[in-house]
View 1: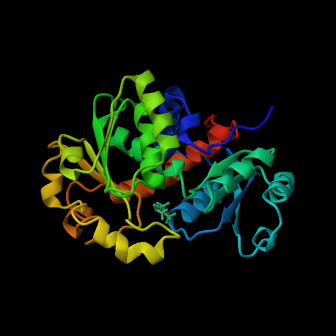
View 2: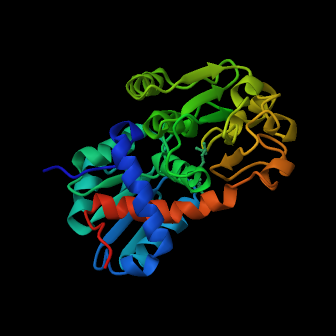
Amino acid sequence: MPPRHLISLDEVTADELAYLFRLASDVKAHPERFRQALAGKTLAMIFEKSSTRTRVSFEVGMYQLGGHALFLSSRDIQLGRGETIGDTSQVLSRYVDIIMARTFAHATVTGLAEFSSVPVINGLTDDLHPCQAVTDYFTLTEVFGPDLSGRKIAYVGDGNNMAHSLLLGAPKVGMDIAIARPDGYDVKATYLAQAQRAAEAAGTRIELTDDPQAAVAGASAVYTDVWASMGQEEEAAQRRADFEGYTVDESMMSLAADDAVFLHCLPCHRGEEVSAGVADGPQSRIFDEAENRLHAQKAIMLWLLDADRAE
Ligand code: CP
Ligand code: NVA
């Protein structure tokens, strides 16, 4: 049987997501019960892009589960000198038990999965960031309880990898999602179509608008991300102009529900996509969210390696 991968939330069912949240919660509350769960297992972590949270949380997570993690910068392995994705994937599969990769092209991660005989986890591509979205919805279950249905998440900003992953996850947790983005920064049609199919099945709503205030109105969670993602550094100045009016500040937050929280995958730029007052204010959950990467990804690795039973 081919291994199970985590490439996109489109491939994860609502029940599986709910299961991952329960497991993450268990791992978080009782880490000692899982300290040998992945003993003798090795995780290869391929990075084409920078990372603080993903690298550290996967490496520490693997250590805390009794396993070992290898950091492989694409600049240092032969992949960076032209060895094919297929060969890299097949070779790594002979050495390690699980692979995580952060890449520019989404096709690099799907290519790794295609040729791998061990599970592959998408640690962010230009298109998707599923580990972050699993963590974000897990964080919302901690705030609001396990049943998120009937609530709305508002995403204000670029139609990027985070927007896509939150969009795909919302129907799976029963949430409505409103995405506010300026003209020219829309989400990709493929992911929107996938999310629309999931929303139809779940009976949830998807709203796309260029009015951030309308998106945020009544939302339980307000989310934003950088205006220029990794690889778009040269567009930063243009994007700062195009995203005028999209800063999540105190007045925008005041339109959300009274108990609304603010989330951001981080890193953030205070004064650009979020005001310092919101990022560091009482509604912000950004550091709980960052911590939860550790717990959620431990759950993901345990699940993919079929090692999800506590001692
Ligand atoms: N949110 C996130 O993935 O952070 P890093 O880029 O630091 O890994
Ligand atoms: N959209 C951002 C997310 C960083 C975690 C990027 O791709 O740079």
